[in-house]
Amino acid sequence: MKKVAIADDHPIIRAGLRKILERDNDIKIIAELETAAGVIEFLGENECDILTLDINLPDRNGLDIIDELLKINPALKILILSISPEERYALKSLRLGAKGYLTKDSTPAELIKAINKVSMGKKYISEELADSIAADFDGQLEKLLHKKLSERELEILVLIGEGKNVNQIAEKLFISPNTVRSYRARIMEKMNINSTAELIHYAICNKLL
Image 1 (cartoon, rainbow, N blue to C red):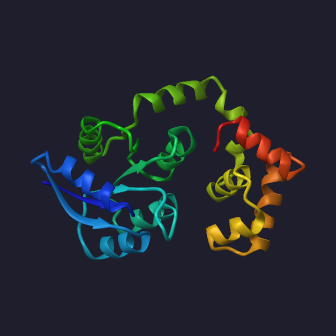
Image 2: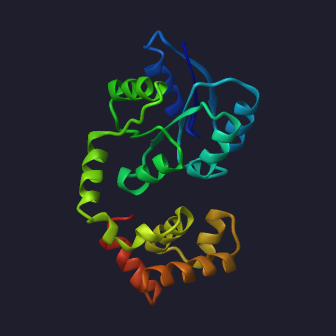
């Protein structure tokens, strides 16, 4: 019996995932969790085989806690379930230690398939992601300037692209305006871009929004 915990801050998503996964008699849902803090606390006190993890948790980014979760339970299999476009986050998720990545518009059958595959210690990616990886071998993705950015820098670049100012970004990410300015300067340096207007143009042209 696979012990599965669901981490997502939307009750309707958790309910839907539970309904789908409980169709498999070999899967037992042992917890529904809303926050990163709740996930960390639960895994510190309970055995769990598989965690479905949303990226956009209210208190922390799901990707930022993968390493911490694997330190608590090295045998844990993490399957990222996100609304975010795969090409932005999927490969980074796998590099950080997640076993699989699915978008929330995947079919129920694909979700069950992914759960079963990661439970065996194998990685699971969709056909769309496989196509992106194939394109990567051609060097196309490596030419994108934002590939040089850290996860936090990319997050701030996207917010800049959406037209948010320094104070709005600071409020959204719970950091100081000066920290945002430092990130923006670092992003510009890494991407060899000289103005906020150019950052916005880049984000729009490369479909980061």
